[in-house]
Image 1: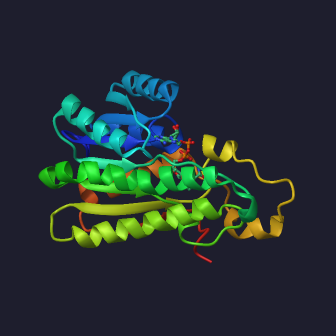
Image 2: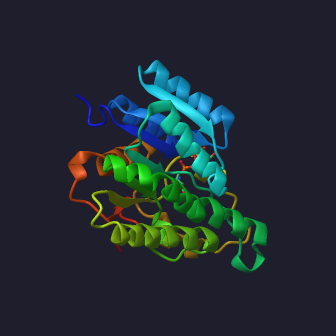
Length: 250
Ligand SMILES: NC(=O)c1ccc[n+]([C@@H]2O[C@H](COP(=O)([O-])OP(=O)(O)OC[C@H]3O[C@@H](n4cnc5c(N)ncnc54)[C@H](O)[C@@H]3O)[C@@H](O)[C@H]2O)c1
């Protein structure tokens, strides 16, 4: 028996990194997974691995910064599997720059994907989750809990997601669903591998959020997300769970 037997899980950002790891983990624990992403290749890669491991996954292209896409994705998930038990808002992007030099396009994209995306997905999914008494797990970041140099838009988007989690948790506190947030810090994924910092950063300013224990692996974060999404975490609602190697402890 798996913790997610009979459950349907919709995962954003399922084409890479943590989203892929969550898809593999939850499918391995019995979930039927509907994975969405902007990357066709990424989704195909995840679906192949889930299938090779004996799991069930269907996919859909969705840009979570577009409200219509989000509603269409939830409809497609229901058409595929007939129900929805867990929404995992994992998709996210990082843009790095001196704050005074960041183009508006980058600011808008980061807020659009990292904050508006989870809100639109929640709007679309909530009626279904109220039916199934399901739950939402948002993936924010240590960047949502502390100030970080050179990533102002990212920090603002993730702090907004922390606040969105708590706000929705309060609004739906009497409705039988759960809404929580996991905050990883540095994790070995494409997002960190492709981050390009300006050549003239002050490394001292980055030490506060670099930590002392190195980076996490995506499957370590997926294990935390799986627990929060499972019935074992029935008492967790409105929780902001750090999985950050101690970065925000000091
Ligand atoms: N990697 C880290 O160090 C780290 C630390 C803390 C929090 N996070 C957060 O974890 C989450 C997962 O990040 P990751 O590290 O696995 O990154 P990743 O780049 O490996 O995966 C992100 C996925 O999101 C998808 N995506 C991007 N824009 C999208 C959009 N508009 N609509 C739908 N999908 C979109 C990408 O195609 C990609 O498949 C993000 O929310 C990120 O902010 C990452």
